[in-house]
Image 1 (cartoon, rainbow, N blue to C red):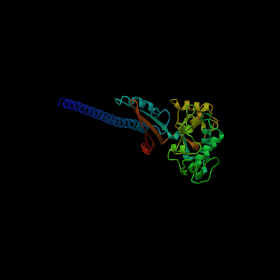
Image 2: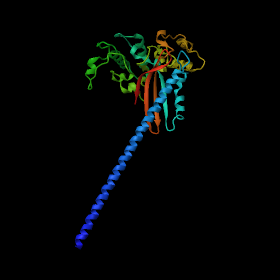
Image 3: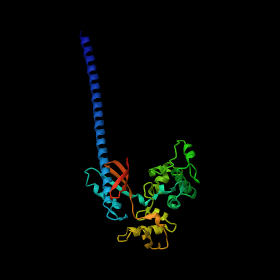
Image 4: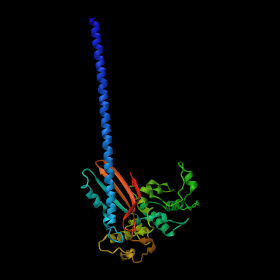
Length: 323
């Protein structure tokens, strides 16, 4: 009887140890699961906060554009100094801020105007070739021709190959085939689908700027000389050197210089004999790209969009993206 009692005590002890082990494992799993749910809920909450912080920056930028008092745009306007708005955002949110930029799409080369019907718009073609030929981009003559012809073929409605371009047969023969657009660009990111345009050419590298900074799919078709990047200024005429573009940029940024007439460039030293076709330039802009990024600790959330000015000087969002 004594041995049986001892054996029963041993079995009971083992059973208790097993039960305790199971309970410990269950408690640990419940604790882990609860922590994971808390972290997930926190991440969702922070993600929502980040989105609204980014949207605050976006609509703040729209307000800057709406408050413009001139009938023309310049780099001296409040909207062109959106970094000041970003700096103030830290005081608006206890644990976050936004970084907002505004780009004037009218200051870029309007790619959808490269084609008239199924033929080249020679003026825009020349501007685009001059841009792609600038040494900063590092493209040779053949690569430049390939890119220009391929953009035309992507936009025009026919299936006839232009020079070094490409039509349906090229795109359907790729390892991952797709159809050619044969219609205007809806967004500038479509360039990544076009023959000859690599990610390095589109986005740029540490050494070279990206094509996306100088071209647009959203424009009235004429270039705002007041806001165009210096590389676009150089592309407007064969007579504009890098030094001339620097002088133009300095002139248009100086307070007091009148920029209400696009012919102001004639007032710049060394530019009196340079001619830019009047029908290609303006001082008025109706399309702007806004990029706003909300930041909290090590997290970030971006929203971007293109806004279009209406006749009532208000702005309508025509494109929207949330990353």
